[in-house]
Image 1: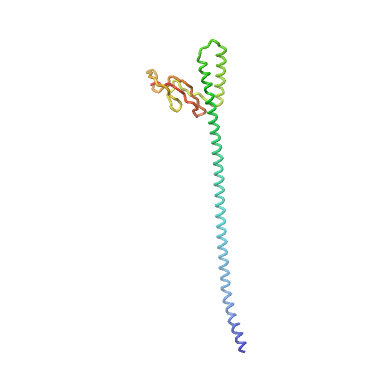
Image 2: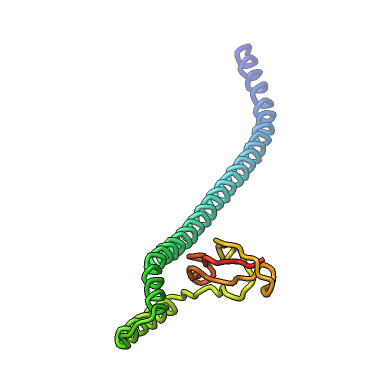
Length: 186
């Protein structure tokens, strides 16, 4: 019987422990489920933050590429305009020589007619290229368009009025490609 008592005591002792341990096990399970849910929420939030960061990187990269493309197009257009202006500037001495030839008196009318036709053709080409001469004689001096090489006193003219043009100036669109060389009064 002593053995029975010994055996029964441990059984009795074991039984209440099991019921006591069952309740904490369920509380632990609930706590572990809560922590798993919290961990899942944290992981979801971390992934959402990562997606936002990647989306932001993508948008910045797309904007940077768009700016690069626009800047490249502007630079190409500016380069084209500069090359065009440089080319026209190299042709302008021909225009000057034809203008001088037309101012000279000649007995050969056929020669004069040929020079006039050549000058007309060159002026037409310049006009098609959007090259326009800068008005000078009789206009008010503008340092943005004219280059004053001489100054004369003339009471019949107003102040800063251009009285003579040595070399015609030209503009390509709104850009001055060669300033007019002029004589300014007063």
